Length: 559
Image (cartoon, rainbow, N blue to C red):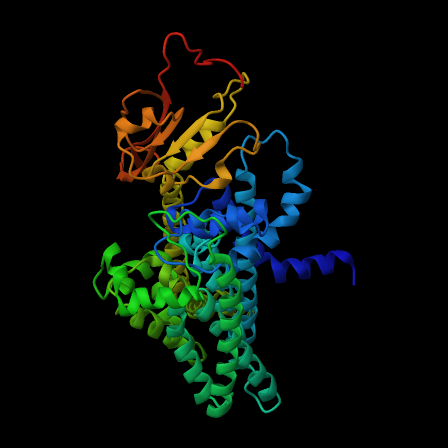
């Protein structure tokens, strides 16, 4: 075949997935910084890239987080990012910081998420049709939260990669349940349960609430026997446990000469990080300390914001096509059981998004794609009708039946795109700590920059974008960083810090040299464009120590 035909076929096959990747990458470039929820895996990825397996230099010995987490995701992400660092970033001598490594790692994670979505979309095409597969990609690209979170180094996102691959296998197994495809369906269902089990044991124990309905469906459709399913599940869980326990026991063991700090005393026993999380969230129920929401919150707030247009359409699609109903049932079961936990966050239920989107894609396919095709066929048929009145009447009725649902879907789509833009504007203003930290190391157009010195980063800055990727790229430049907590403002000058990246606007002994605004809320102004704006206020200040008269403050000098 001619190259142009092959290229066109390739674009039709891969183009929708590239659209999703482009949107996710745009979010990385627009908001390259990270919040505190992402810090463990992000700092671990940095440490793998820059320290290898020298565990003593890893950040988690000083700042372990509330509960221990696995290092397997960060290790895999750093391995995927390392070629870019070795071939491109290490030669970028003009870079003041290592932030490009953070961007590269986040794009690599986004690519993994989109690859899993592409596999799921191909299962949608096999099970629900070509039009539904195209609609699935468009719906996903339209939604803000799935594309924004795709590059975020959260345990939920690492789990989502395995879960989405597994759900793709499960959906394809549903499409393969014919006399000739039962063997393949059994193979796919086994692989699906294995992937979701790995995600449960290693990254997010709550994924078990999605594995349960999927497993019930596998048994109900006789893709596996009960004994075979249990024996297979035991082997998968045992393998995943071995992987995480061995690796994380080594990673979390305190190095020789470790000085226990206020946050981490060290642990020399066997470590299963996600087991600790399970105990913390369920038995102790301490996640409620971070806030609680009503039981209906996921269904009435999180899912409408995350899915946008796809939320109502998912129920329409399941009503139209019975093949989509198992997907919707599993998704609703997962969210309903999750709603029993008092502490709720939107990111906790992102694993269910592909299932909702697959059902919504059926509705888009029926209401738009197939309806428009049927309308075109009807027009051709009635154009050959000798009775002008009859032809015109039939065309008008057919056009009306097609136009109403199609216009409704397009209108909701337009609203979804607008909401996506509003969320993106808000997110861009949500990382003042990262912006302030970048300005501390930046060089202006005239070549001026701050002299190297010791920097103290307080909790407000660390929680809004500061990471080890934002530190100086030159280890010998003279920069020293501290995130020591519990220091009173009056103590900072006596500790000798040259700069402060702080949430306080005034600190004794220091002058403000930069002030960064952060997101405060949305303002709607119908008489101005854009109608919706992000409201901001000063949140993070960059301070420089006041020097005595006999000291050279280096102002205006390059280091």
